[in-house]
Image (cartoon, rainbow, N blue to C red; front, side, top):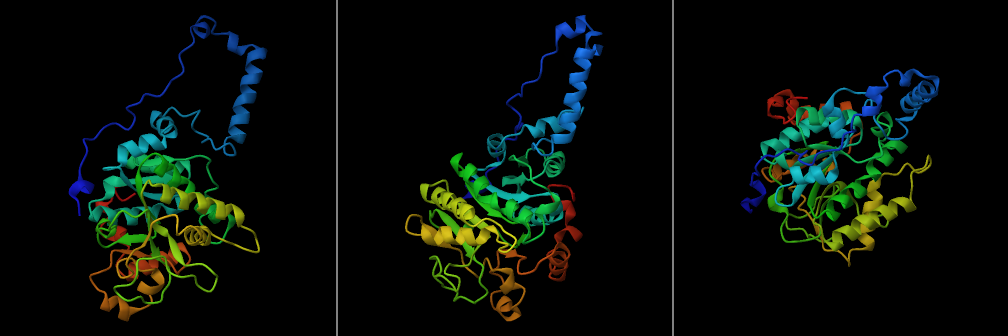
Length: 356
């Protein structure tokens, strides 16, 4: 593995580009009573009420205009370009996407990443202003928000329209990063690192991914896209992906977005983003260089947590464990605790977020 990934840049201020501030009005200082006139006061009060009522629907944080805290205003203007410039190492960034309910899982995942000395490469894409401000308050520069803002409460229930809207933004976020010229590793935060995954990104392929099937593969299995299953497509996980800023990787993300538009969420078909990702991979496999990561290193939760014999036979080879094939925050936390993977219990001091 190249030592370049571990290169430490000189720390700098992510806000080296100054934001514009409104100049004070000399006219107002000369006429301090004019604001009390009915022609000025009534429209001003109306504007304040309108902003207070409609700012959530406009994707604007309610405290952005009325806060006296400069940190909040600053992070509200923080751009993806600025964040990538601050966080990325040698053109590579590790990305997760969170809303407020997922913050405990973010903290747990970050501890495992920090144990592999990769946390400085992490950029948190916050889907709400609470997460944006909280992460940047504790770990300045490592969170960014890409508007519009979603309904926080609706985004965490698996199978809901809110969850679909939350996960369906993933290819768009990742495509923006590739178009800015960066390689990106994406992780869901219900994962835990047991080893450094970067040595497994062999070669110079466009897209790297993991199989979500529980069937055991031979240790020397093919790295090609697996054949279609019963539903006419493969069963690749959309929760652990590495992409290089190539035409092939960008094509897959664009096709992923197209597939999502073709099969939107409905009450009868409570879809998520993963089938669309698989259709995009299968339909465009000849136009992109695809690479299936080794199963023993990146097992699905349906295999790792269900097959003790396989876990014992592959001991020492596991790299990232995904806590899927189970639904519900409390159930996921209990399972992690049962296996010693809920690191916030004993290692919260190792979190970049200071234990959150």
